[in-house]
Amino acid sequence: MNMRTSRKSGFTLVEIMVVVAIIGLVAVLTLPNFVRANSVSQKNACISNLFQIQSAIHQWALETEAPAGAPVQFSNISTYLRNTVVCPSGGTNFAGSYTIINTSTQPVCKLVPTGTFAHVLPSNTTQ
Image (tube, rainbow, N blue to C red; front, side):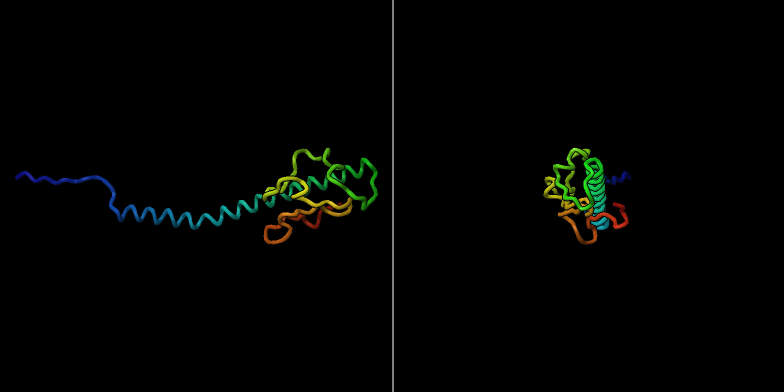
């Protein structure tokens, strides 16, 4: 008696559906973490830019002997900035990203000034 058993290798529809469901579950669980990580990295990059702008204002004020509260414009501090400074949350130029008023006021991000991931210098920075 010669019995033939035919065994085709492959995956059943149920096995494929289980794998797809697991991949979907993992994607749903990790996607919010990626979004939050992106927001945090943009916030940190913008705060770094704000520190750079504040440092440039201080250097300009020292070199020109500008009094406290003297008005500042981008053209005054552009030579003190290492590279193009724009907010990573969608800024296209300096004027659209940051506001600078005078030597006594901290620079402010125009794009994300408030909220959970606000781009704001810490209040303990010295002037």
